Image 1: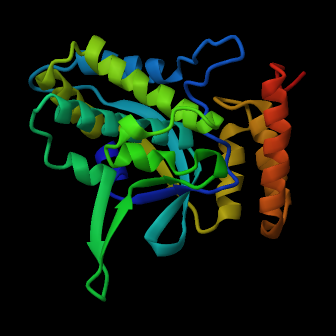
Image 2 (image 1 turned 90 degrees about the vertical axis):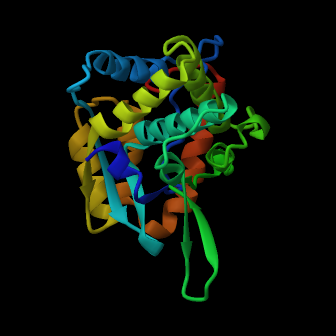
Image 3 (image 1 turned 45 degrees about the vertical axis):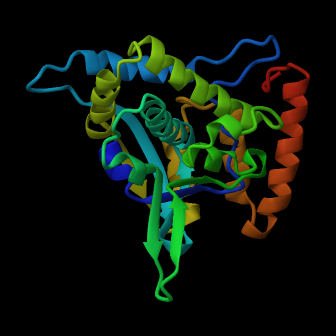
Length: 262
């Protein structure tokens, strides 16, 4: 499905999932280039477009299962989905700051409103990070309050800030800050960038598919696969304790500047 279709639904990243790690700064102070590479790969296909046609760009798959309140639990694909969401936020903010008109469908792909049976209007973000490390930071970017969003405090907060900043730099440098070019990129991004959404009936089945997709370590490290195996083997009642223990372990390794496998 297109990203336009993807962001017509709501997603939450469960609190036992790993944090957002794209754009993370390593102990030497060097920022990861996953976001920049993601954008440049898309831009390469975007630049190949003509006035009559444009090549599609496939970014892989995500695995979801239905949660409560018609929200999908996002079991696999958080990094790409979160980055895509931040790209939408950054494009909206760029156009707002330039005093330019936004595409009519853009705001609804970030934030949506609905009225319940009591007549109360509920505002919902299309993507919600529920793990403790995020501390609700994504809501700041979704609401357009990025200037007041925290930039430090946890690894996820810093990484989300780095990713958003990388997108804004891309819009200003690679697209030359041209509002028409940014609008064209948005049109390509939402209509021609596609992914496969695999929907399962339960978390257990979603985790099994996650393992099947990633068992050769494509895009994931052994530590991620080990974590998934532990959650597959644990009772859901133990998820909270397992999540806390795992985070303590990985944070210790990160602070020490060590590679997990060592």
